[in-house]
View 1: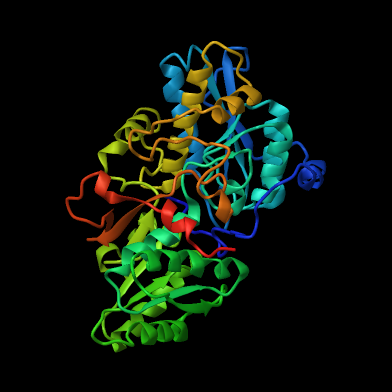
View 2: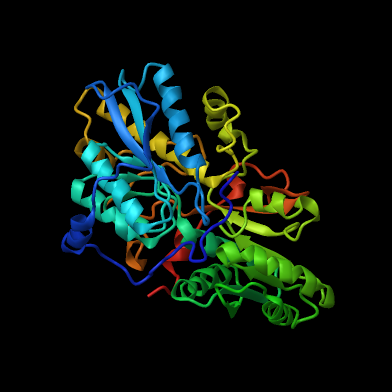
Length: 439
């Protein structure tokens, strides 16, 4: 996978946001312009009435986060569908756009989606929700299955997320660690985004009968974390009779922290380490030494089953058939996985429409009017009612709060429980998040 690096403000949530209004988006709509560079058209067969046009965007060839596997997976999916007669006889045409980790660029991608008449934006990544959801809402284009990287994806009525973003990951990690850790230290950014992490993490700890974590702030732009590592270790080893846990959640700085932590921990009693998806993934584990690296034994919460789970076989079949040898597409990359699930939702919506008119309006109405989408057990059955259990805590579009707990074992992310059944790997964090103090 080529895109392991995530921005320092990965998962930029503002928990106090509750509603959106049409007036809020007027300014964003006014500045959007057509994009003529950075986008392509792949996987389709033209622009006739028998073609359904969609868009997928993600950052590529940047110095920060890169997710080239997401548009590549979208193209492979379209090729697979079209080789088998399309969906209800309609071919699927995928427009791709490089959002460049840039708010202006992603607004241009969204504006082009409107100009090109796409029926949905599917399986895309951007940390600039304010920039792209405004023009999508204005044009009535649904946003299906974003990465879950901003709060906007869980508040905008145009958004149809397929995972639980950072709220589910943090609460799930806290709950998973509660029964196995003594003192817990959460090392998180000294920022507004970082301030929003402890309530979610502590909600999980509390649900598991544990006290709140030691909340340790760390600089976002540090080049080393020697003193931060020592402070975290002192707090986590304060009770010698109980093995403590250190939880770095620093986005792309987690690797920098762990490099310092590996050196500092030799002077302290043993502790466990844990983090969330986005701070660690398989490519980072590989790049830092695999089984001999600093992440061996680390617990990680994810939204989906591990890549080796047979529930991913259908996705892997598409990759093998339509993108064999394309090293942009890693089946273990959650961006690729999320894109596959998002296109599964799109396919279900188009099948429900059948021979009727396919437009952004009809796709959105289909999603709103009780459509339920099965994903072969990769997620719970997905649907997006007007009111959800998490509306009261500021996440009205969060409909899938499932997490899985994984561990780095022999250099590979695997299910934390050996021999666990498919159902026992998954924990629904809805009830825990309902009790989180995120006001």
